[in-house]
Image (cartoon, helix red, strand yellow):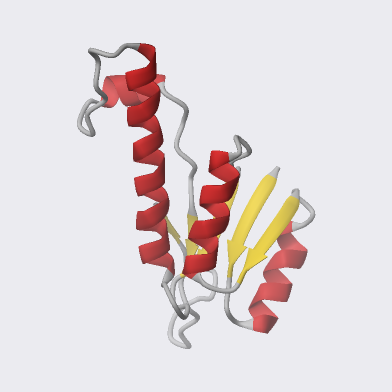
Amino acid sequence: MRILMAEDDFVSRVLLQNILSSYGDVDVTINGLEAVEAFSLAFDEGQPYDLVCLDIMMPEMDGLEALKEIRKKEEIAYAVSSANKKMDSCLRRNDKKKRNDKKKKLPPFVIPAYERESSPFNCIIC
């Protein structure tokens, strides 16, 4: 399994990397911009990640913005794939039937910044 992780806090990064490394190869980035660049490179080379773990609060680009950029990259790939198969067919965002026939989207795992009042195990699955 190929895993991409973006975490700016050193201690959290080491801890999460140790946990995730038992499931596969982990590529580590320290901000959302680096994560988007790593995702794009892997995607373009035909070796996409199986899991992406994003911290929400990071410098340069936060996790939610990084997730939006990753989703844009996936949407472009779906449109190109559709156009290559049949020139008169265009994949529309609201056409769920066609989208489901395409390669499944990567399920990113967004990790929010720790807050003392809430559990550190809360997460958002997008």
